[in-house]
Length: 435
Image 1 (cartoon, helix red, strand yellow):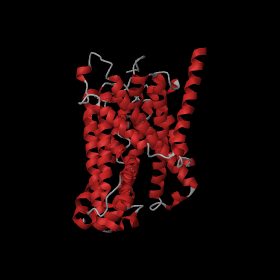
Image 2 (cartoon, rainbow, N blue to C red):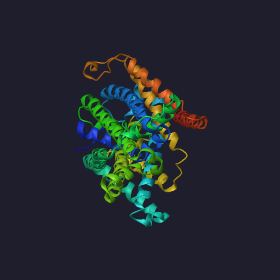
Image 3 (spheres, rainbow, N blue to C red):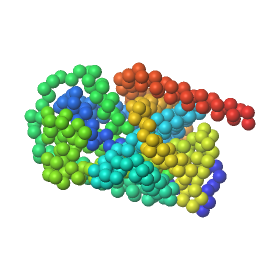
């Protein structure tokens, strides 16, 4: 079988279960292993309120994604949704802000965290040369796996997801036996400001569920699979996160600040003994590997979609004649991940990365309203958020509220980011005009 001109030529091999597991895999990243103590530092036992705030907002946003995602059966994810609603300029900004601002730098951060975690087992990773080789092995191996077969990558993600979820679930179940009800009592009343700041930080742990939707051209029956996978994935993430927070707070209580760097490892040490810390370290490693693998599976499809629509270099739209995967986009994305992992010049942009994703979420929420006006023959067969405009409007307001907690310096950085890509877009338009 050879690629057919004018078509994406991608195999539809991702079903509801695989998509749900990939949402779990990417969303349940490294943050949940440390964030319970950070959230509790200001809120104490009332930190659970921040989970309710984030849970409500992420469900509102997820409903918007479910609606626009069920109407889109081509690859590109957030880029395709926003471009369809607001045109090529908005699509170009969404494409680049998302994959550069929200993905490349976070992948590099996760890779460095993975190297730091493995230092306890392999001290040689403390040296620069070994780290460079390690990053090359990680990104090169995952890129090769992605190019050769989507099915094999999905299996790897399923294995990594289960490998990190099982220890976390065991930690919740067994750790619950060591919970003290005294540690869960509210001794102070949180302020609206404290909850807002904590929710902005906690929301980072919920980012990423949209990544797997970039594989729209490889999802079986997207009209059904996308809404179901989003609902199951987000529900499971929320239940898991809240359970982890309650058990961690209930076990550690006032000693939580003493375990700020690894609160779950501390709980595991109490619940499982000496083997507990090792178990959590293994889960952390699997979490990081699965997170990077899921990103390399999903995000290059955004480059592929941009090239397909003439907004990115044409080579990104090439599909391998044998494996039917966008191999050029995968190689380019993995190479950028590798470069920023080696240089480490991404720490300053870490906050901008999360803010970039929130801006994309805002674009998708607004796209839901916009696309409501475009009716097609299959509209009755697609998912539609109940309640009219209430859900997209509430989601938009919630995102704006979270973004209002950013500092002036961070907002300025985002504005510069958008300006630079706007200039690039105009330059591309000028070149096309001359041709």
